[in-house]
Image 1: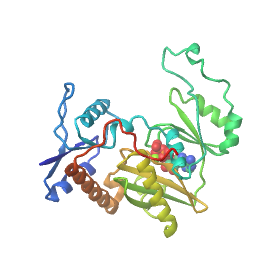
Image 2: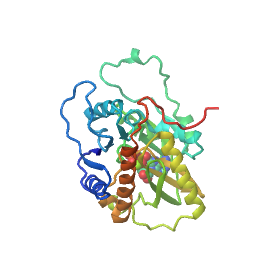
Image 3: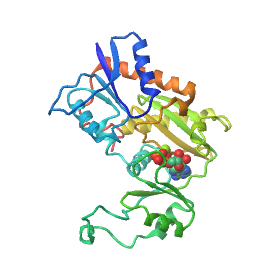
Image 4: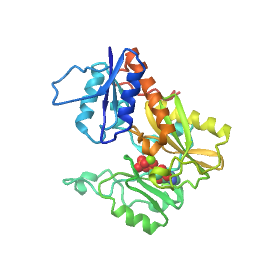
Length: 309
Ligand SMILES: Nc1ncnc2c1ncn2[C@@H]1O[C@H](COP(=O)(O)OP(=O)(O)O)[C@@H](O)[C@H]1O
Ligand SMILES: [Mg+2]
């Protein structure tokens, strides 16, 4: 019997539904919640596939998952990649893959951890040339954390004064400055296994639990095909098997906004029954396939994304 294990946080609908769906398929694969205590070095892992929904908040799990890969387990999503990616690198990678990106600038930190003094920062140039940055991005501009989720530390800025004020309150977070995309349509894609893409019109202006309610005109078929292709390119480039990818559509061009959701919100209350069922079904199929195939990538493999030639 092959085994799929789930590491989860406080969410309650997706994990239970995934376990139920895998069980229902009557394949030689069982699914269950992982239980962990302390671990010896090279501890053997009793799973073929692990689904990680929470290691970004529980660092102990990150080490467990990396050890699991070393023991031959397939982990969704790749635990080596998941903790090193960032939104600045992502925009550069996406642009190389032929996906339109908002103009983006990486900012030096405002503050540092205790013990970092002026002398520690001799490689940094001051003052920051805010004028040049804003000439590049234009206004309004988005100031957001270079890593993170849940709309924390995402600020839409309308003037240079407002930008300084915000930046001065940012503390030790590394931030990016990003062109604000004024969109006609906004699309969120559920992407499973770097292959299955379900593009959904999604309205970020609405309250959290109403965003999947469609209130925009339907997607043009050619645009939809491009969005599916670009969502696949991004997920293959990043090596994510479980992701959501957002595009703001401006003048018919899909511009990728957020595509690094390695533990996306799959709660039934956010997705609604229809999209929730789709995600559970695709995830069950993926987990079963990977468990049965059981030939994980080597732990140090960089996701294959583009030919540097
Ligand atoms: N460059 C941008 N242009 C327009 N809207 C943006 C831009 N960046 C972020 N947003 C809006 O802010 C929301 C949150 O930003 P996002 O990058 O998704 O942060 P998080 O990773 O915290 O979810 C997005 O869903 C989108 O509605
Ligand atoms: Mg987001």
